[in-house]
Amino acid sequence: MFQQNKTSKVVTLALAGFGLTMGLAACQPKAEEKTEEKAKEHQSAEATASAPSTDAPVTIYSSRKEQLIQPLLDKYMEETGAKVELVTDKPGPLMERLKAEGKNTEADILLTVDAGNLWKATNDGLLQPIISEVIEANVPAKFRDPQGNWTGLSLRARTIFYNPKTVKPEELSTYADLADPKWKGKLCLRTSKKVYNQSLVASMIDHLGAEKTEKVVKGWVANLATDVFSNDTKMLEAIAAGQCGVGIANSYYYGRKVAKEPEFPVKIFFANQNTTGTHTNVSGAGVVKNSDNVAGAQHLIEWLSSDKAQSIYASADKEYPVKEDVEVSELLASWGDFKTDDINVAKFGELQADSIKLMDKAGYK
Ligand code: FE
Image 1 (tube, rainbow, N blue to C red):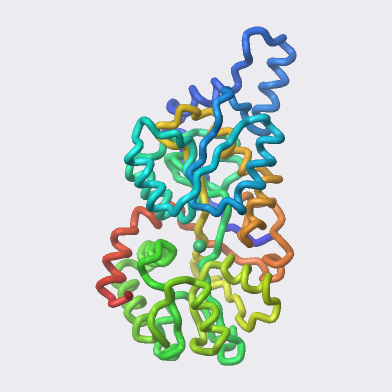
Image 2 (cartoon, rainbow, N blue to C red):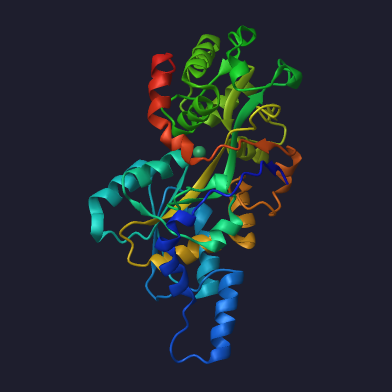
């Protein structure tokens, strides 16, 4: 397992009044049940997750591909008897749809990638806070919203990749170091328009301050081997082809390449191991503000954070589980342990506007 820097538990107590009603309601047995059954139900609710309190279906608006999430949902339906409906689209259109549908939405859960997107959904008033002991126990505080509007469900490292023919790992250290003139003409980057880079630069603003981060981003731009790429996979292929020596990408894009092509001539390097830790982002979910099945939605999200769901969900797309004691796939284990950044991922959203402005100013297209 890779290490996650332990952070002190982010306080959700302030909101306890909010969530308590829901948490308790889920534990409340039906009137006709016998006392021992009540006790049993309550006990299992504490140990695992509360049972859905309604027969209504749970509708998920998901920006994750159907083939990735459907097998897991099938398992959930089989296990619980609950009904789950899946609507898939890109994050932007899904959020627009939620906004347009308002109170009439069928959606109960928004499932998407990047804390920047989840933060934006919260900021647009599309989600509602849930207080869940299950999620608090399963998901480290730094990988979920401190206000409880969403939680991470899988992890991806956005880190450095290199061509071992032209670059030695000893030459690599931090994201900021890629601004050093020694990388002139060797660096490849994806476009700054992608939320993944907005989140990465947001984390750097938090760690280094805006001034220093702007210098770094200017340095990156000065070091570019070629125009920015439209996606991480093309950039990784350019490293493999020798067009660039180093670049920054999400770990699962590399995982997909290596799974198909074990000899893919690119290596992974976990950035900032001697400083702040590697930038690690989430895919995650939150309960929709206008959901008419909050209990069902919460139960499904809790289930997705459980051990068995975690290993399936994470390995389905070469990601890391968000739950600490769940084993990673063999492929990911072969990349070794790494220290993740301690920053709360919600910061990526809070600093998103600053990050976009800064990259624009620095000439990062
Ligand atoms: Fe992606």
